[in-house]
Structure formats: structure tokens, C-alpha cells
Amino acid sequence: MAQFTDNKVIAHRGAWKNENLPQNSIASLKKAIELGCEGSEFDVWMTADGVLVANHDADLDGMPIEESTYKELLTKSLPNGEKIPTVEEYLKTGKSQKKTKLILEIKSSKISTERTLELTEKSVALVQKLGMEDWVDYISFSLDACKKIIELDNDARVAYLSGDLTPQEAKDAGFWGLDYNYRVYQKKPEWIEQAQDLGLTLNVWTVNDKEVMKWMLEKDFDFISTDEPEVLLSIVGEQ
Image 1: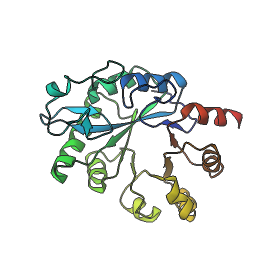
Image 2: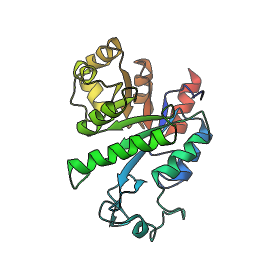
Image 3: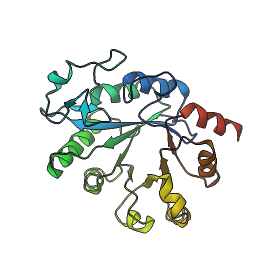
């Protein structure tokens, strides 16, 4: 059984900023693991020929991911020389250790809801095929995708990103937690205690300001997603 770190620090798109690594790259994942982050978040798209890849934007250097084959995407390189990683490669890298979890974000297809759901089904199937249920938490702005994950795996840990469900609505929908922008919690601080009373986990994105980090820690958030994991790790270490 994996013994994952418990320090609340989620590296947003990996730990990339300090060393100018490409976001969502294998290198940024390895750096997050090396730093000892509790989790490393990454974004998932599906190519035209059904390959799952890790990338934040809908395009890779101007090439639309959903309209390109994986072979076509391999003609492009990330700034550090890496090729765009498949999600399988990314997950296998994560499985090589047992300290840092992987936070898998399902991106909403720009083509159709059906395509978003296909991406969702393939993502869950891949996690299950690799036996990585313990390693992977799921997030998405797509309510349809989140509900599909819950339908496919009752035990999946799924948090919703959009910020438009009350804690009670999220609980009723079967969510494990909320993962809202920090401004949502600042505008509706009562949601924090409501979520905690309901047994929902609380994550927040994307917190790069030290004072906001400290506020979230004071409010006992379970996770804090940041582009500055080194900064947050130092603050957590001082507590």
C-alpha cells in the first residue's frame, strides 16, 4: 500500500516554474515528486485517433490536439526537448513512487460533450488497467465528466472545479470534494465550514500568494494547488 505524503501541497501542472520546465511534462512531474509534494496535477486531452495526452492548452505549439493524431503531435517538441507525454507514460512515471499522488483533470472537449465522456471513460479505464486507483484523484470543470467518473467507479475520488455548486449540492451528486478558485471561497466563506461539516474535502486553485496560502491553511483546507510549491512547502514546514 502506498504511503502518500500529507502536506497539502499540490503542484499545479507539476513543479515547473522555478526551473522553467514545461508544464505537464514528465520533468515537471518528477520535480514535484522530488520536492515531496502531496500531489501533482495534470491535464488530459484526447487526440483525433483516441490517444490520451497530458497538456494544458487545447493545442500544442499551434497544432489542435483534438484534431491531430498522436503521430502528428510527435512532430512537435516541448521546450526541454520532451515529446508530449501520453497519459499512460505520465501515470507509469507516477506509479514508480508512492509519495506523490496524481491529480488527473479531464479537459472539456471543444468538439462535443460525447467526446468529453469518451475521454473520461478512457481515463478511468486506463487508471484501472494500471492498478492506480490509490494514486489518482480526478477533477474537472465538466459536471458531466465528473458524474461519469462517479458512475464508472463508486470509489473514485472526484472533485468539482467550476465553483457553481453549493457544498450540499456537491455532496448530493456524490462528490468527494470541492476544488474551487480561491476567490469563490473568499466570497462565500460559509461554504468552507459547510463542506467540512458534510465530510467533503477542500482544495483550492491556483494560490501563489503567501498570504492567501496562509489563510487557506488557517481554514484547514485539505489541499492547496499552486504554481509555487516550494513556497508553500516552506510555509507548511514552519507550522
